[in-house]
Amino acid sequence: MPMWAGRFTKELNAQANSFNSSIGFDSRMFREDIRGSLAHAEMLAASGIIGAEDLSLIRGGLGGILEDLESGKLKIDENSEDIHMFIEAQLTSRIGDAGKRLHTARSRNDQVALDLRLYLLNKIPELVGGLRLLTETLCKIAEEHTETVMPGYTHLQRAQPVSFGQHLMAYAQMFLRDRGRLCDCMKRMRENPLGSGALAGTTYPIDRFMTSELLGLGSPSANSLDGVSDRDFCVEFLSALSLIMTHLSRFSEEIILWCSWEFKFIELDDGFATGSSIMPQKKNPDIAELVRGKTGRVYGGLLAVLTMLKGLPLAYNKDMQEDKEAVFDALDTVQACLGIFSSMLGTMAVLKENMRAAAARGFINATDCADYLVKKGLPFRDAYKITGGLVAKCVAEGKTLETLDLGEFREGSPLFDEDVYAAINLENCLRGRLSYGGPSPESVRNQIELVRGELAAWEK
Ligand code: ARG
Image (tube, rainbow, N blue to C red; front, top):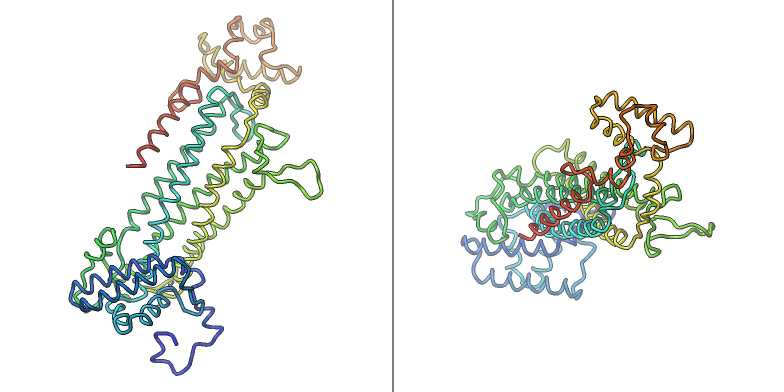
């Protein structure tokens, strides 16, 4: 019999019961539910709403339930409606009337809003841990490749020289921002909805500041209707996770390209690639493909919650039960993706020679050639045009800029001299890109240092 059976003449239809139930996915919040209930009970007793004896029974009862759930001695009853009902029913079966007093001045509406906030507040540091490990891994690899010349691309066309280290550190910046967004959404997540009641607060003399304090949260939500119907924190969380997946997915795409015979810039460790059931030669980057593929379901969670909320009148509506599956699935997905990504990157081999060979083809030093003429006094637009002509000549004759002789250069402009060869040497082109944030080895080393400094500051 459900707790609300009093006003009903019939039992809930079995099909309706299983459709309505959320225990299959909300039982993972059992610790938070118990924490919230303990704080609520402490407050009820301190405010004189329940007696000291009841409080002590509730403490003991909830403590025992927690222990038994942790040890596996107590199994979740899949027929319960949700984790809140299950724990309350357990408590009452263990301690009798005191258990029935726990829900005074509370509703499942403020209870679930609290539990979900507490749960995510607990989980976000784990996600940040995943971002940290990944960023540390990037710094470590980048440090070894500040001089590894590779072609930088625009439109997936070879464009200008960068280093593999510079390329990796671009992702480090994305993951720093991702952490920032998670921390930002935690600020609003710390608001305490408990004490909003079903929607209209309560006539009991509760102390919402006390439960906030006990739970380590910020202020109580300022409006009871908003307190129970706000799921902005889920949307913010899911959008932060969606951006993490955007970053991982772009990275995955590059990993997949780099593994192809067309690029062969890296070789994944055999432990992080799979074969084919028919093609004996295959080595597939499944992990990166799956991360790219899973991005869709995290975006799906964000869209599901936004859409679920958009037409809801205040205050609580059962539609809101849909928040949890979206949030939990996204959380699990991102956690798994971050973890596997660090391991996959940490074990891959970087094929420097192939990057260098690709850099030598595609005229990625053409800008440097034009800049050479600019440094000799030519306006950039004229230098650009002359270099374009030289590139066209090279394309027609199957040459590279480096293989033109000085005579050929001088057909383009008399300003060319022997020192042009040094100016268009790829290693020099990389070294010369000293602008702040640029790909010179010095600049990339500086970036690594700054990122490491940020990582260290995360501790505080
Ligand atoms: N299982 C519900 C949820 O996840 C808990 C709140 C139920 N409240 C209610 N009034 N039916 O949203």
